[in-house]
Image 1: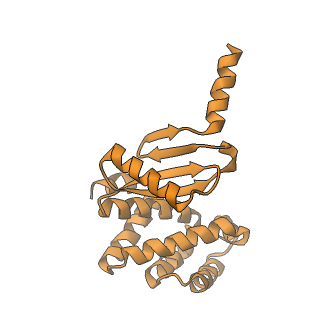
Image 2: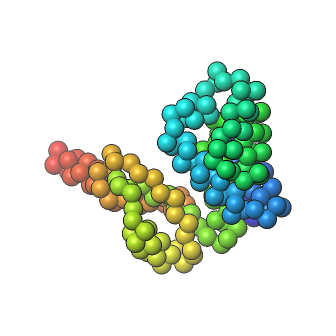
Length: 184
């Protein structure tokens, strides 16, 4: 797969590739992707979970037990749960969010999609998300898997990262450009 060469260059990319290979062999790519989305949402919503994955002070044995409990609580599929245990055992839980991002890219490439990371000031409605996907598909000629993130600091508008291209139509950037132009 052409995308995996670039992804494998990083530590998180190697872990994501290993997870993707396991998921493909188990015919569980969709299940793993859904479990990773649940995990990502849990990390975003829990300071305790953020501390668990980022703290170097948590002993590996404790981390393994904690991620097993998290996997059970979130009802993650077995492949993802076991993989989290491997990350914890290897002291690599801090790579979890990067692994999730890289896995999504691999899964999207496997389905013939491209991936766009979209940041908005407020959560997008289903209709807005569908319209955005349609516009991105028209631009790229391929189906686009969209990963959304909310960042109130952009004030309004969107930023869209599509491969190496960044489309920034955020209100914050427009106001900064205007302020810079007024300074002369």
